[in-house]
Image (cartoon, one colour):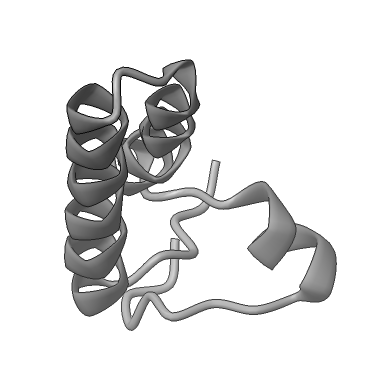
Length: 62
């Protein structure tokens, strides 16, 4: 599969994911689990929504 998330995008997604998880833990809410989505997309380098919209922030093709 092709990478469609660039380095900066990955860092931002991972940071947002960690913040959402931390807020969920602080508030004792299961909604913090939503933070796993940006972390997973950051780790894999692939975003399904970007694929549907034809967007790529990855500078390296492939």
